[in-house]
Image (cartoon, rainbow, N blue to C red; front, side, top):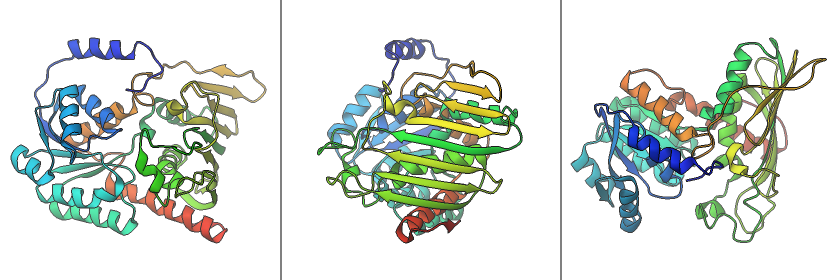
Length: 363
């Protein structure tokens, strides 16, 4: 559990003791018991209309440990066994991206809706086939894209809709410094497969910001990227600057590297700082997720709202799963429907092409 709030664990235990009782309407099998699975599993415990009946993980020891921690009845090492015996409504896939295609197809063939962690797939063609397979088998394919559900982005979207910056947003800038990628043993303690990814910064981290930039400012028409590798111990890029041209005339800049550090107490809370400038002034987000508004010719003021400090990055995993569950229960489209999410992957490919050819690329 990651939190900058020392009382987060206590708050969670109090909630779990008082949570309301509802009829379970969705049975879930979670696939994967690695680092990030803990956030999915914890969030499902706070959604009473859903119940995780089993964890599927090739490492039985890890699977059984997760079952004990989150009070889940059964552990499996093979997904086909879990599907046959549990007959889940949803399969939540929380495994490395190169495994997603086979697992998603397997679940869809058994009539289960799929929630899939990002990156969706190492290959755009595979991702398109996954979307098509969901349509063919008449199940839902949803992407667990959780950054847009972080509270500061939801509040920013609300403020933009209210027109605090006027009708035109000039520029969106985000500066990311996680500081977890400079050491010779970078990523080994948390997500060791990062080290061997031929694509890292944009593929694993930047995809969140492609989606978030679109959530805030609309469709992207052109990108230009310069990408570098700072740590020689890893395979992929860990530093880059990407510029975005939006259809509404706004521009975006994503200045990111995982090598250098920030001054944040918890760099993985907001992952950085954001500035939005428009015709009426500026809105900025700091490392603590607080938002500050400076209208032209006026002093800067703090926006009153209270972002969660519980669990991962503003409790965005819970907010994501709540949204996805509500959409499935009510047969409504989600914000991260697989077919619509393909646009993010197309933009991602344009970024890599731009870096390779050192020129702007139209999307």
